[in-house]
Length: 376
Ligand SMILES: Cc1ncc(C[n+]2csc(CCOP(=O)(O)OP(=O)(O)O)c2C)c(N)n1
Image (cartoon, rainbow, N blue to C red; front, side, top):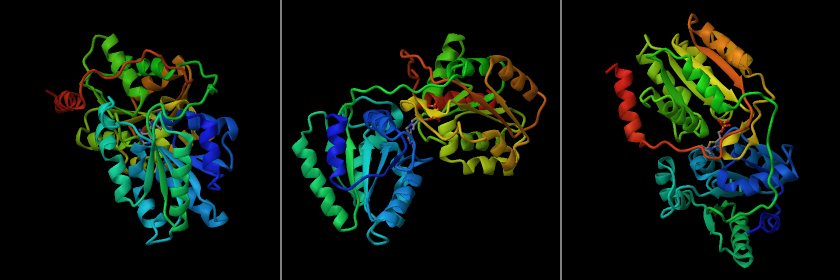
């Protein structure tokens, strides 16, 4: 279905406020919102899906109109608490229209982190008392119209409604291009970082293409993958995984290779890191100002001073780098500095079209990594 047809149908519900976290399967929608509104008071890219629910609730309280909250199904978890304890009709009865990208749909091959989430997506919505329709590439305008009628009824009862979007169900002929003028790519940066590592350094890398690039960089160097814990799902949690390791392995340096979208998603964790003062913790945030992995929709990271925030949270040392020389300088200083350290690296939004995916399973990754961490 063409995105403009989809949006005109949605607008019959009186929805004119849009918020969420982008998803590659919802690229047609995200690009449409960026093209039509950009980032403004009508379209807010939220830090996480729960925050998007908060925004939608606030909008409803101020206008009486339901808002759209869009997300990948992996974000439902972030939204469960405000769905149950804020929106639900046993509490404030605040209607929201959810648009959810269905990764890991049963029967369609997808990456391991999506498989279980995909299996439980519709069951989770049932459990949350959210009626829903599944939009497929074959869905017709009449079917969507009927679904909007159902949404209307749900809203009248103070309930939410969801459109679950299968792969290829939404189309947008207009391709948006997102870019900035930073000289280095995330992949070049990842290669530089591991080239400067000590032999026993431990790496925890974030969700998305960064982990895939790290995996391929190890292959290209003829190395194994045991030094890297690839956080393939759980966006925003790699720095806490890294802290959990750093607390137990005080004699080793632990690097978290993070993304700006991921760091912002659970920014409170940076405060916890600062307050805990792990001396062996090095937080590298690759800041391309965007959710590049899922299409390039901007984050707010190009508008904020992340190193200043980290410093305020208690990080001992902070750096910003964008050239090879600046990155090498920061990494070399780190060899003599105690953490927590934050290195923000500003990169462009280029990535390879032929970027592969890890060829080892998450369990193989975990086992090799645990042996490496144990020192075997
Ligand atoms: C909870 C959750 N919401 C959304 C996603 C979909 N997702 C995967 S990667 C990604 C973007 C990550 O952005 P950033 O951390 O800035 O890294 P970049 O892709 O720019 O390297 C998103 C939104 C997800 N995996 N999990």
